Length: 259
Ligand code: COA
Image 1 (cartoon, rainbow, N blue to C red):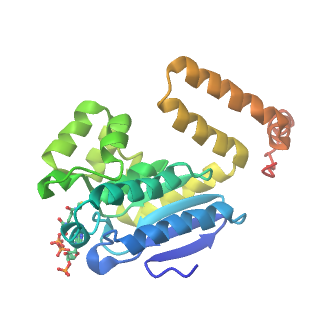
Image 2: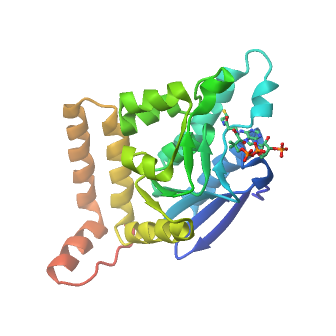
């Protein structure tokens, strides 16, 4: 598919997807959301890609859902709007390949929710995270009320959601919203280094680890432990598990094949 609002660059098995609507601070309109969904499907199927970085062009990561779209929403539309956006972001969260958000600037509303759907977030010191929907008479609708409290706890999440205040990358890292905060010119390099570190590991193991965390977080501990044991056991059948353990014993780097 040809993309009008996204840029894609693939290097060393790392796909960098850049949200590219800088004149509107990369605000998410319907076309952009469709493109993000298609891009995730395309990258999932691309055997040359093992990890994905999402970032924004210009001074924003994503400054939210397109407010002009929301203002013009016909009656009965907003619930569908939220469900569609949630489904797109769920594709990111359920990606079997690790997805890292490289948050370069404003990550507000839907932009913060996009970052939350990624597996890991690296922030620039210039990043600004926030869920300002209440200032528009709305609430977060692309997963923010669900993922933020799961990530940083109920109290800190409710403070951000109820005030609508923004926080910078350093504060986001302190709260656990960002995994790391770095100077702007180190942002993509840090995200790439992290992706490259992940890519040294067995791809099936990465996929199963993502699944175990995703399903387990919403399960009772006993159910989560049973799932973990089942997924752990499923790796027994992989050549990668044999290779990884043998390579350790033979004191050499493992060569994983994803099989
Ligand atoms: N939806 C639609 N357009 C948006 C947008 C959004 N979420 N965020 C920014 N834009 C547009 C602006 O309307 C402006 O367009 P224009 O040049 O055609 O007027 C352009 O992007 C630049 O934004 P501007 O507001 O002029 O930049 P700024 O530096 O003064 O302020 C922000 C930056 C991020 C603080 C401000 O744009 C903002 O508050 N955006 C909305 C954030 C938000 O509420 N997001 C949640 C939406 S649910």
